[in-house]
Image (cartoon, rainbow, N blue to C red; front, side, top):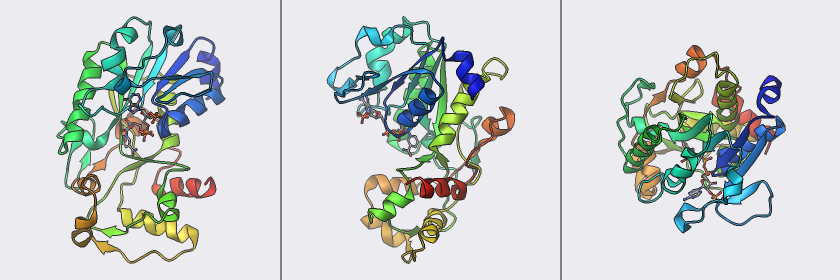
Length: 292
Ligand SMILES: NC(=O)c1ccc[n+]([C@@H]2O[C@H](COP(=O)([O-])OP(=O)(O)OC[C@H]3O[C@@H](n4cnc5c(N)ncnc54)[C@H](OP(=O)(O)O)[C@@H]3O)[C@@H](O)[C@H]2O)c1
């Protein structure tokens, strides 16, 4: 990491578009390494390294924020029409810059349902949900933009401040059981560190335009929730069968249970050599437990 900082901190300038959970973590990590980082939000703020970008309201950043930018990470999901907010508002601007790299955070939802089977980057996307189809269209728009883009497909993101612990504390937890159902997930630190690892080793690693970032052990929600209750020293509520719980779930919550897949990280971790910090939910959740 220090190597990375010293090799690029003086000549690189990062723009993080959409500084929510992952964008903030990424920005914070880069800043710690000494890099210049500017971040966007949709609402006014007093941070001098932050600017307002809200594609829905047609608010685009002032020209000055783009001066000398070399790297961009977009963490912004498709808008309600299914278009990419960044490309819709800023494509020409981005194309006029001398960008070395553009990262785009996408989702593994584009793979659809594999009935519990493993899925990797060589599998043809097969979106089941409309939102995933929109996402796939945004990926295509990024690839066709001609920008030096790299797409990261992510499963459920968690980390300190956003994990099952918050759901338990806010009493928003429902323990649902569905036979053979698994979910893949990733700790926010591994999203950040793997992207930085790829940037650091850009010259020595073969470039892959699409990369999954997931941990080693997809597993059931019930297992994850049980582990959190164990760490808290509390008794987990009795699981409810999915068929019984279904009618009370929101359409979006229901849709997550309609897809069952194991996301492979072999490209990232075997071919490209990234070593996960949190290989499984137990290690990752212990970190959340100790930091929340
Ligand atoms: N959460 C997950 O489990 C998960 C899983 C797979 C993939 N993803 C995807 O990965 C990316 C990062 O996820 P995340 O959970 O870190 O996201 P997040 O916390 O929801 O942050 C999204 C950011 O996008 C900004 N944004 C949204 N619409 C915008 C628009 N029209 N114009 C300008 N900015 C806009 C938001 O601005 P404000 O800060 O002003 O709200 C926010 O900073 C997203 O694309 C997400 O869909 C998420």
